[in-house]
Image 1 (cartoon, rainbow, N blue to C red):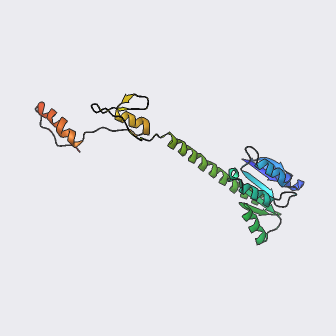
Image 2 (image 1 turned 60 degrees about the vertical axis):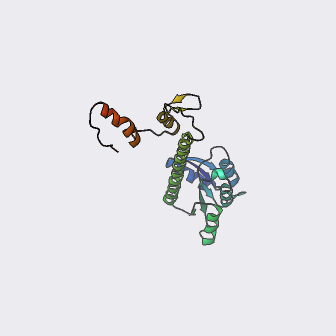
Image 3 (image 1 turned 120 degrees about the vertical axis):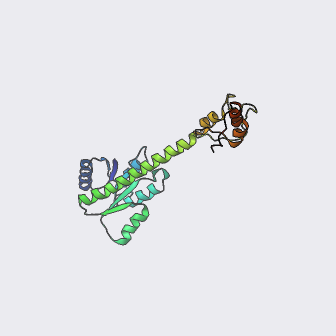
Length: 209
């Protein structure tokens, strides 16, 4: 999992980067909000970002606002680091678009746990997106039977778009993915099957339907 880490404090940034890398994350570390935004609006940005609130230029909250205003970054998970834990301050961060926050100073175990939550959310979103795409692709492949369908009045074959005549059941299977089972309707039982039994001198059974 790739993570963007933005913190202007070198000591804190290096410590966090080392901790996250030790946990198996691929970390892209930057020193301010402008650099963080440049990474996020670039090609293939990390889907999880840990942003210090107080940074020169763009602060963490402003980066959150920009992310939430960018449709293609909708699924990005944002974790704010803040030195203030007042309710108003936290609410401001969440309203800016942060998914979660950690107050400084924090324990590495707490930050790791919150990052793990973000990782799970990102993975679930990716899996959901993949399944939706698979479903849309499957639906796009289903060809609907529409309009006037040419059918032979004698053998009941139908003509496809390539001017090829084929059995109705084959046409349905090709254009919808459905498979046909075969039986005998009551009318054909009386008109076709029962006379055949009579010709053979065999008592005809009752209609099996």
